[in-house]
Image (cartoon, rainbow, N blue to C red; front, side, top):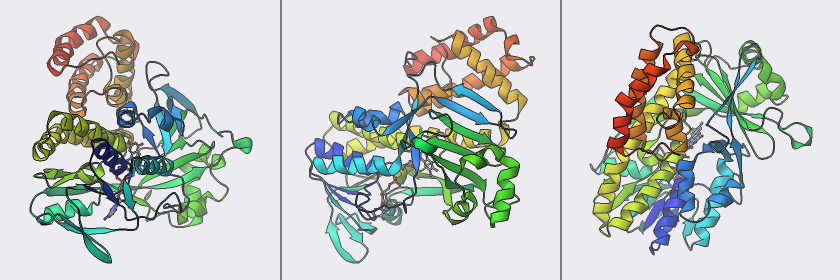
Length: 449
Ligand SMILES: Cc1cc2nc3c(=O)[nH]c(=O)nc-3n(C[C@H](O)[C@H](O)[C@H](O)COP(=O)(O)OP(=O)(O)OC[C@H]3O[C@@H](n4cnc5c(N)ncnc54)[C@H](O)[C@@H]3O)c2cc1C
């Protein structure tokens, strides 16, 4: 079996295939990042949650990978005038997210895959595939007999493109009018974090925002999200003076925390694109399967892209225990995962709109505060959609539909009030019992996570 793409999902997929006794070869277009940095030395990190960590549990690697993460216990919101507001994520510190360097995670998984006997061919860029002969094509080298082909080659997937060209798959790629750029917040002297170390720092500014996520060495990786065009867009911010003026106006408390020459860093770091990839089906008979971002690239505003890809691997492993017939397994996997990846794609886009348009909307903030009360007072029958996505294994599609009912309830409770303490909690309980509890039974939802 052949896996194209030795990113995090490709590595975990290859490991689960090897665990099931298959000979697995991987092809990766980048050089081996353990020998040379693939990202020019930049530190790029992401958030892992329990949902994703479950994939590593399959190989007894959860605890080991946690050693290279920083627990993130809540959000620290930074207002323009420098005021800080901390919101814990979960009901207690056990409900946390884990910040990890993508590079370090990928290196860890490359080692783990090789230890399981998987051969990884680096600097092999897949350019296409012939699914009748099961051959993969690579830039500058002869085709390879691949057996079953797995496309784990990320959002721009060459394997998906080949499946589309073969008429087996339809895809769509919807680009966001926003992009992102990383900026480093260096550690303070002595390697201590220069801002609260166990929080995701967010500077919400409506049509643009900055985030900072902790690294193990005390630094934070900042990511600024900006529109491509317009007054606050990447196109406009093209000089040291403009960048400084922009940060002085919107992110004044971030300036002393950023590197001394942050304007130069801003101008020299690349801009990243953001988009949503959807496709259907994800497989061609028993010959090929797409997984991870190759099947469902999403925007990063729920911090779930990789977690979703890792969960793909858990589900595929479950499906393999039910049947030896590959075509049936791929079809079952596809049917189970597609509604869930669509749901998290939609929720990630909704979160983007929330961050962009609603952070200053009093009615939105009122609903959030009332929801906080519901979660605290009705712990056994109410968990927010955020908690269900981040801390449980409840399928994304179920969390999504429960979230819609939660919004109806919150709208009703907030219709005639201005302060969260005025919410009618007796009525709230009735609404939850009437509208949500039956759905828990219907979808087999367990809120005791
Ligand atoms: C700004 C940002 C923040 C994010 N934050 C989070 C977060 O907090 N939490 C989270 O869960 N997710 C997050 N994500 C999403 C996450 O990065 C992706 O979902 C994840 O990397 C997908 O893993 P993958 O292995 O499927 O694909 P990738 O990580 O894209 O890996 C694909 C691999 O395939 C290789 N490849 C590509 N094309 C070819 C080819 N033609 N031939 C051979 N090899 C090829 C690539 O070099 C790469 O190694 C974020 C994304 C962005 C952009």
